[in-house]
Image 1 (cartoon, one colour):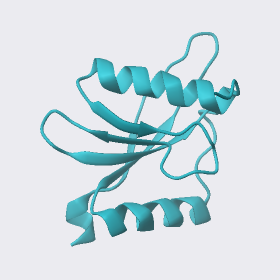
Image 2: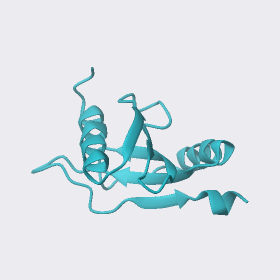
Image 3: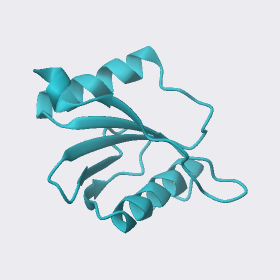
Image 4: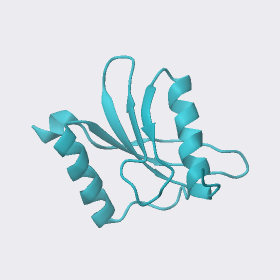
Length: 104
């Protein structure tokens, strides 16, 4: 496993989602892979998570378009999760990018 800031951010979000009752289907610490996390909520919502280790870094328009298209193709929700690592790992907001209803 990689020990990069991005990998630590993905693992933080993995732990947070599972603590909130989500079932993580897959997690990928490769920053170039989409999605970084694929999970299912207790209510059955399927979602892709686009994770970035720098909380100030917004996804580029190209990244956003690519990620939303992938979510639409699979009819799942898509979220952007900016994770800060210092002083403690955290993610104050998870931003919805697209929901299956938006794809209809």
